[in-house]
Image (tube, rainbow, N blue to C red; front, side, top):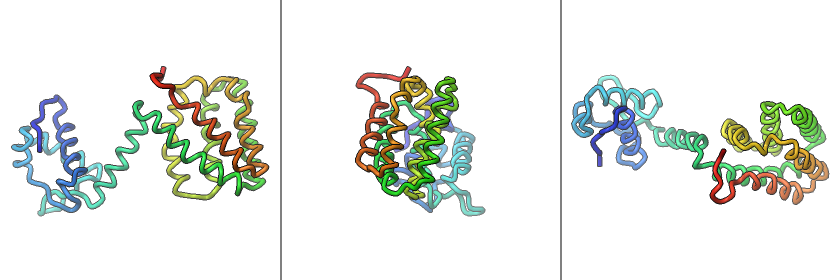
Length: 232
């Protein structure tokens, strides 16, 4: 059911309702949507607002115009909306714990495989990263601490050679960096002084898969909020 629009940025609200129709399956992939005049009547807004909403969705690849035929739902509209929703969730505070749970699933599984498969070159790269991390931590260089901390985890995820998981993990990099930036514990000398990164490297060097996974579990789970705790 289309709901009359009442907010100031009218075209955005129209876009949201159009998206809802696509996500619910009311407007199917490849289907022609009703014309501008009829949409204007249904939404009870001006034709200009409808035009702006349609244009925005066309630019996002959700709708597509076919010359002389009208406007259609793109064949891959549903996939694009899912992708867009995912990256929107990654940037929203309310999904913080779910992001940590996602990291937990990916990284504990990948470190298990990495500990089995890692080469001397892999270990050398991790050790160089750790040495640099120790140095910048002593200098309290927060930007480099954040960068190197993420690179350490990305290196581990990359070792098993699963390109899908590597690309997916890298795609949430910005969200992970923002998570670290908002939690001061990631920047303290004590955090890296406890040797967790070093211990993970040592476990991997010995191909001790169970210890590597246990260390990663402990390393990530402590980042999850305590009940009722909010970001500062």
